[in-house]
Length: 378
Image (cartoon, rainbow, N blue to C red; front, side, top):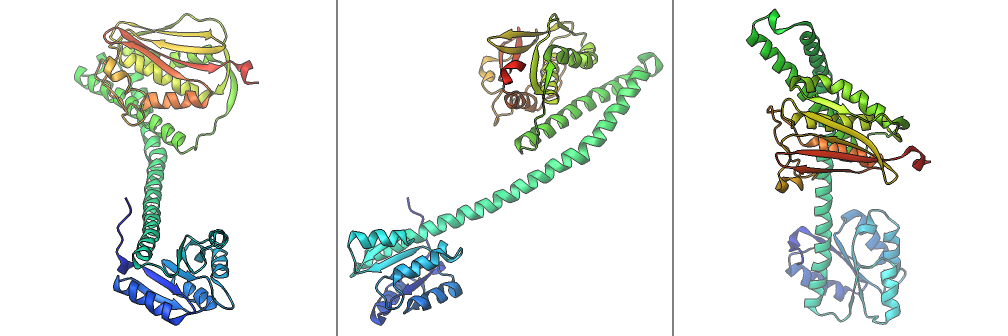
């Protein structure tokens, strides 16, 4: 369906060396409320086009000194004039002239003598295309403003939020390591413990948000290095053990072999950390989270398996969907944003792998990701 236009908002330049033709077109188009300017030569047409900036040009082909084809050719050489649509008015109806007109940058042809209805429909069609382009341009400008605002928000998250939150987290960590429940009022200790836990969760969320935004903006640089993924996983397990201990959860890995991969170490550490955090979050107290590293079909696969709440089958499709950002609360009411898994999927893909999971409600979940073996990247 063609866009409806308001003729009074558009200016048309009529170019014809025959005065009666100009008068006729002025009368027809003026009655439709179009704004009209006119020229009787090619040179005058070019001057007027620069000065008046019309929305459309009706251009006669047969003119002395400079014909319509030459006017159109010169217009197309000018960045601004080249964007103005041109409808050729011509008594020539042979195919060669039509082809030449389009080669010179014409948008349409109307043969003389023309019918009023055909003229108005073709003019309306060209101007509706002009209006559509203007709408797209406006929307593009608005989109750019939105992108600029998003980048500003990213800057605030990166610099103004993350640093003080990191300091608060470290302060609370240090206090928690220095005191026991016996040192103070038990209620006060519980509040301190809750503050420490909340600071960890908020910092993890900010960290994920920062990395996700960087990744979406293409601002993350991948630095591939050869690393033993089993050793890397062990290192992350050691760091997260204190979080697991709060729910008396053991994180175990039986793998002792080496599995070398070529990856961005920080990215893959972030993936492992997120998967372990999720496993602990959705595990019941006094259970085990099992981690394994193995080789499958020429790839190295890392899996994190919990014996927790699992995921309802109807929710599984939402889990790795960018739009839904699906999330649920952990067994101890731990909050999440749904960003962590999307980040994991994104980072694994950037390192040449894939992420998947299997889950059964009330039994548990197993999240796995694959990475190419180091030698396969040579």
